[in-house]
Image (cartoon, rainbow, N blue to C red):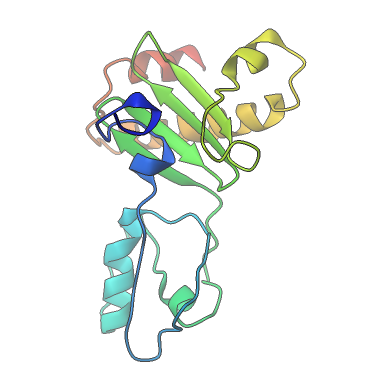
Length: 171
């Protein structure tokens, strides 16, 4: 019996979507933990930067080399996006919004500070109205839809079948 009673990693709970990003080497600050949201898309630009090779400009990730040497990066990221065959997710590190291509659990909104175990989906409260989370939900949902739209315009393969419908519906 896995976390959240699930035994697979296609959901957007932290146990499945949060992967440790660990580097070691000469000059890299040892024993430092940084909770800035990063993505596996950052791996390639980071390795290129460490090797002194210019990374292609159209990569979705950023170099994390400055973090490794105790400095802030030149590009500060506000959101991290995750995609898989059942939907999309965005987080700013404190809040997480996921849209699933599944009629049973279509949206999830979590306050990771007050609910680090991700036990309470705040969507019923938000849909009911009067929620203090409404503005953050609108922000993250809008950012995610814009991200999906950009992927579609770029010709990226979209795995979740209902996304074209939800993006078109929000216009």
